[in-house]
Length: 148
Image (cartoon, rainbow, N blue to C red; front, top):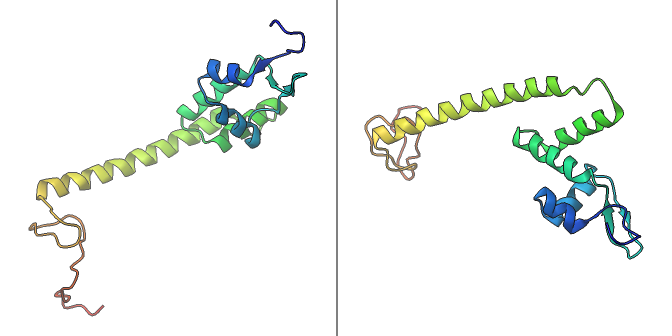
């Protein structure tokens, strides 16, 4: 490592090796995902060498759909060896969330396909015969016969 006051990696080195920006490191520190690093004699932040691996784990968990709060809980549980916050159970819950989102997106896609097929042309005054979405009739009296 060269200089005698270096016991770790400087901010820029960690950011570059992990593929994140410096603001991300500071943000993760504030969120408690990363421990506050020690300082060199010159006042530079010095991160432990395993920080890059930790950042890679955080990024991988985010790609799997975990929020930073969930990642923080999983990391904390792992550090304390606390048995309740189990990664497997969280992954099962995440799969259920993803399945629900897929169902919602499938329904949205179906309705949008109906809009395209019906040739809908306006959200406020559609002229297609059987519009699949409710639309506003701005400035028109209600012709449904219902009192509203």
